[in-house]
Amino acid sequence: RQSEECGKYDPRTRPWYQAALPSTISNAVKPRRVIIMLDTSRSMGEKLNARSEQTKLSYMKQSVIAVLNTLSPNDSIAVIRFAEIPRLVNRPSQVPPYLWEKASKATVANIIDIVNALEVNGRSNWNDAFGFAFNLINNSLESNAAIGDESYCDLENIAVLFFSDGEYNLPAGATDESVVSFVSAKVTETENMGDNHVHMFLYTLGHNDPSGVEKKISCAVDGYWKPVLQGTSPVNVTNGYQTLFSTPMGTDAFYNYTTWSNPYNFTSGRLGYTVSSLVYDRNVEPPRFEGAVGMDVSVDAAIRVFNGTLLETEDAIKRITRNITVQNYNTTCDQQRINLTKCEIQSIRHYAGGNAAVCIPEKTQTVSTTPATLPVPVLNATTNITVAPEVDGETDGLTDFISEEAADFFEDALNCSKAFVQPCPGYEEYPTNLWRNVEMKDLTYQDRVCCEVGTNEPSDDCPKLDEVASTKISKTAIFGILFASLVVVEIVGCYFCFYVRKQRANT
Image (cartoon, rainbow, N blue to C red):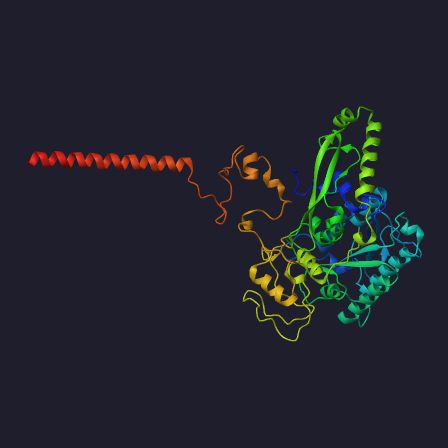
């Protein structure tokens, strides 16, 4: 959809998209438990990169607000700011035990206001911050008030999103190894409490060093790391988190699932419903969440179908969709468990953070098939394979494709056949950042979709793909060839007549 400001229209915040999310389907589907950790130490006030006017703090704020806006009221949320001392942003004076809370509209709006007002101060103590976060998680898991859902399933999928610039100052004597060991122990402790699964996402703002401690943590706890310099919109930086928590909906249990939203105001101002469904790419394992598709139904049309008032129509739609959900999508705990294989974890690592985010296991010998375009690696948990693709020399992080050479390398090093996606021919001719949609403004339909209306012919502005371009000769070219041929025939005919006459005159 067009918007004056790039990214202003975010479909993920619209009611029709929210209605398709797993945690809004029924009480049988477990809500998300989301813990967000924000480094607000002094170094976060520095520029994101040398060419940017944006600070690490301001970029982090935009990314976090985008995550908050996609939560459903069934989800739970806790946002922790930390420098030397960790605190809940919306309850700085709260006494233990610290708990997450429901992500109601009022709670989310309050947290967003506070996040927008955050300022940098002090040094960075990661151990205290992680200790605070996992104490909050464990307290919440033991609290009926914090769990507060009616699901028969004791399964808990917990997301921990950690934003920092990769630098810590405290405690004195802390090393990368001690921090990794501390976090690993906390994850193990929480998961041993019950059917709990902690999924850690670590974002390094302003650096892309794959030997850093955040990458090491991700490899140690089966987590996900993303370096952030530039080229990635803040609203897309957490794409790995969104993808991972959508994987249960990509299983056969939810195949062809559709849902109806509650009535809401369309952007046009009209009241209506949207029937929506999630879309997955099943050419990769696990099936890759791509987005949602929806079809609008105006309230006026729905009322005519059900022949009742607005309230009667709304009740009828809820009753029908509830019956369908109970009959077809009464999922079990196993169907909702995010329990990926090592290859599937690597696949989402690559999708979220590029080649550098992939964790290469230790091996006793180097890989003989390493292509020349990739540095020969020391095969350990923090290997930097390569950082690609790039935008102005820095990682974009949104393109999931890898080269054929990289595919061979990953296959040899990881033995993963479908974890990584190779591009179709000609893909580089098309945009990869769909948030730059303002460039489409005022263009005709033909120019937007690259075809002439009602025909199979490409428009004049369509990119010409060497691999897939049509081999047919255009009508204009055919006319030109015919015209040129007639001219040549006429010239040859005239010359022949002149030559014959001249011969006759000589004789």
